[in-house]
Length: 198
Image 1 (cartoon, rainbow, N blue to C red):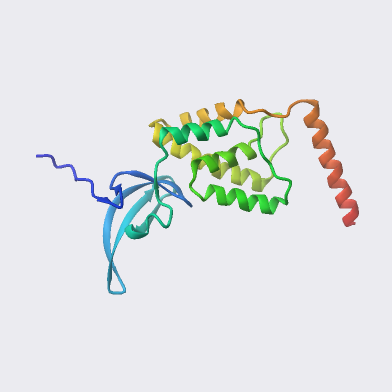
Image 2: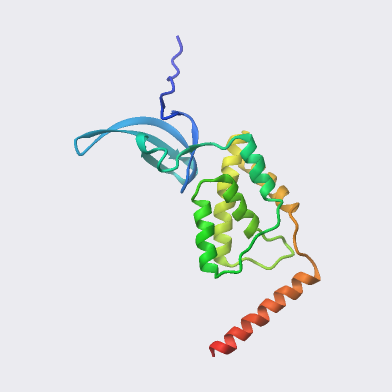
């Protein structure tokens, strides 16, 4: 007789399964426990995020409402990777507003929305540097995407990252003189703003 523990299934999720929690990314259901809270028995998914050295307890009954989901299937991964090859769509709104939108997309747990953030914030070697906050959001998005693709495709995170970077390299980019001119125009615009502020 096998001594392996039988997977317990609740709300369509089973122990040992990798899942995505919107605001933390990929985790693994390590157990389903019962706890008593204020006299009520509560059943909880224990979700472990090894890379972040964090464990989350999610009430099984609230799994759907908090956005806990199964890993993306191959079709969604394909769609997310295809999104990376598109043209960056950067709105001409205040950075703080765009940053909030990017953050919301990252924390939505939606792989295609996360891919949009990666695409929009990606900078090639020839492009101007990102600001600190842009870099932070880009790193968070690419990290989420890398982890999920690695688990779905059963490859290492390094291989998943190379796959993502390969797709980004195919995306249409402004290059050469036009870009330099744009950068200097932007700098001149900044100078104008500083003069007005003075």
